[in-house]
Length: 143
Length: 384
Image (cartoon, rainbow over all chains, first blue to last red; front, side, top):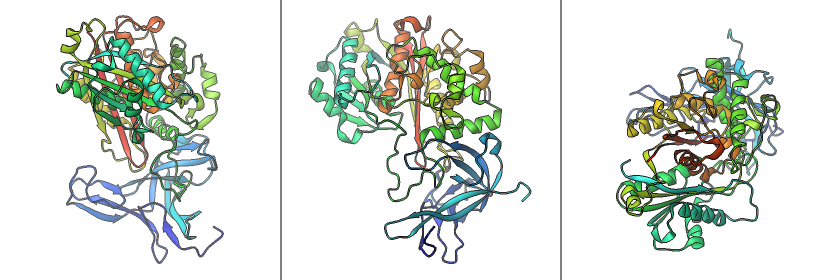
């Protein structure tokens, strides 16, 4: 974060870094069975068709499928944090960290809408480039 | 699964053995199983060795050097938490196919303490915390939260699994934890990831277990049938597709489908089962698997644990060994240790925790890794 001009690189293969800052998640959609899969695929994991998968841009909105508050993690990882799994609007599922206040009851968070943002994680590679990945931010239910 | 029987099976008490090597404890378990069968290494024709963490370092060969290098193929097996069950199933298939009369399966593990470090993750990017979590307790916590959101299953109901299984373990001298843990203590224990507290997590320990699988014809010829246990089904599946696995490895559908195959292969239903050892790596998992294995309908597992029917003395006892929550979970050994518990009951050798009149038992395992997939095995065993 201290280095605003660090060149962004994707921390995970399904994050697309856009020259103009329009970073987003990429998925694959199967024309045969309709499944939406995270990342670029050569075939459909759901139905096995290998001639029906096309690349799609995934939405930047979704809803919490599940989450937990992590109180114990690997050494050096700051806790607590909210580990969430998001059903992406229009198809696809992705995991990540949910920003915002730590909920007293994670069960009550299920179904809440979020925005999926691709941002600087603060981590740098050996060349000083910035790892970007998805984080989730709560959206008002009315949005 | 025509013609395969377990002629001998045993496990060492699980624990922490800093002064003992992987091959030391693996060899001990192998010799115990051979002695249980009344056979020696000279009778063994093939050896399947499961070790989730050391499968690339010839664990089977190292054990063979301890117990006798007697002209046999060794296959080292790795399949996450299903490693031991996978090694056992290979032994069953080797015998059932007619290729071998006697096969040895060993599951063995030396574990570090603390959260399991997943293999094959990015080295230069710390994903944990940055993009959610990959630790195993969290995966099963997230799965538990889904169940709570859908069916209203409570923290208290999940915690009751630990109370029950720890109670069972007080009757098992081979379990690592052997003390009662009242509900209040389980719930007040350190929160790892809601709703799993520390007392709702299995423990990393060292362990080894082994089984001797023979053809029924061999067992009859050698007078081994009086203690033999028949393998009625040996089902295994991996990574059955669900619409969730890009965000959370699914342990439910793969268990359901594996169980379905096992029940069909055995020609049996859950109503025929007298006891179950299932994969209670975390307390939340046990309730999910009540439903996945057909003990109750969807959403009914909370009521089932409340009813007491899955406790020793109940209608269908689950994890009377104390489960992984009490025995500990040495990844590669667990699958065979579960089978060992079932065999004890089918042979009327379970002592104080004997499930009276047990005739058919089911052993279940499922493991998985975030972003990678899952592996599940269900074995159904029958008293001869």
